[in-house]
Amino acid sequence: MPPDRLPALLPTICRVGALRLSLFSTYAQFGTAEEVTLAELKIELMFPADPDSETLLTQLGGG
Image (cartoon, helix red, strand yellow):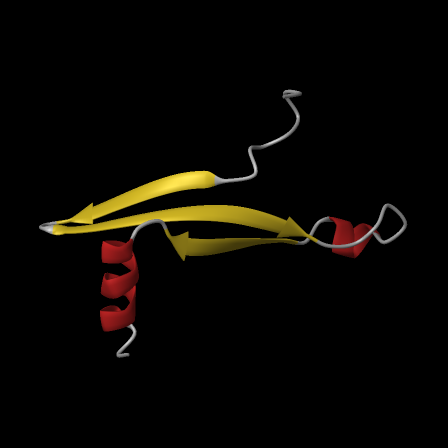
């Protein structure tokens, strides 16, 4: 992989006391070379990486 590129998926594990939240994230980038403002816009999207994390996120979200 060229040094100027980030990996497509970034794993993250957060621990607070007994809670463990395993997530993976990916970045989305919009725009074209002609549109300077949009070329700088990036959005990080995070998703649960396992069923336990999905359940915890659902509970924290009130669902």
